[in-house]
Image (cartoon, rainbow, N blue to C red; front, side):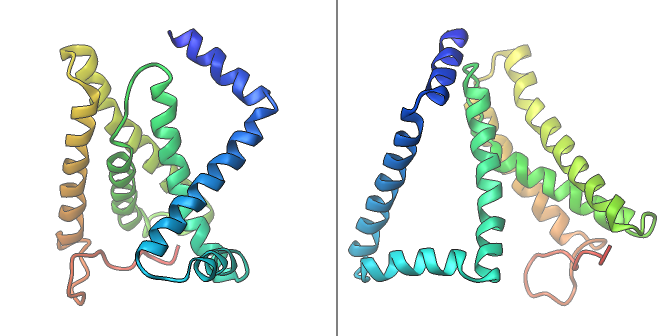
Length: 190
C-alpha cells in the first residue's frame, strides 16, 4: 500500500496535470471563499481584491502573509508525510505549539548566556524542531507499544500542549506581570 501511494504521488508530481490540479484547487478555494463572503453580506469582488492587494502590495501585508502561511505549510507537511505510511497525525498544531513553547523557555534561559542572535536564533529553531519532534514521538510510541490509535492520541496531546503553554504563560519566571492576560514577557532582543 505504501509503495502504491508513493508511486501515485511521484506520478502526480511528474505529470503536467499537477499544475492544473493546483489551479483547480485555487479556483475552488476562491469559490468557497466567495460563497462565505457573500453569505455574510459583503461585496465579493471587493473582498477578493482586498485579499490580494493587502497581502502582497505592502511590506507589512507581505510579512503578515508569510508569518501566517509558513506554519500552515509545515502543518500540512506534518499531516501529509506521515499519512503516506498510514499514520494520521492530527496533532501537528499541538506539536508546533509545544516546540514553540519549549523554544520560548530556552530563549529566556539562554539569552544571558548566548548574546549573539546569529547563534541563538538558529539554536532556538533547532530546539523547537527537536522538542516538537520528540512530542510527536509520544504518539508514535503509544502506537507501537500499545496499539493506541494515533488520531486519538495526537488530538489528546494537543490539549496537553495547550496546558503546557498556559503553564509557561502563567509561570512567574516567564509571565508578563503587566499584561492583563496570560502572556510571556517580551523575548530578549538577541
